[in-house]
Length: 191
Image (cartoon, rainbow, N blue to C red; front, side, top):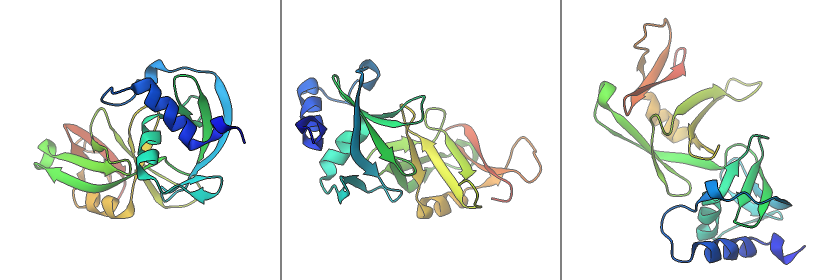
């Protein structure tokens, strides 16, 4: 394996490019050619693996979550100013937990915290979508994050969300959902 295909090398590239800058990396400005595939996999439970071994450095996986994007081909990539590595994601790259609610009814605001420690407000910028996994009746609630990434609500957060479900204000029969930040998100029939 090339030295460039090690997580620490990617981390060093990002650190060099950022040199003291605050906020998220300017991923929308980084467009290198594909460097290849790297043996990094994000499991459905949110665990990160490198060459089959679990990655235990939370700071590294949090950094990687800020330089990840999903492109039009449906694949996930870690992107630096000079390299782009394709990785494997079993379901979603992030999980969402710890639902908090302020306000009530149409004025309520729902927030979740991602597995990378980012707080997201469900609304126009971070919409909630609830579909089912293919071939089964298991719900798949996800929140859009950025750059094509999604965070799947963990079971406990989804159950917490269910306490705020109301009938669709459009009067659609047997349709239910939740309000957040002025937006109604349909969850489905009989939710």
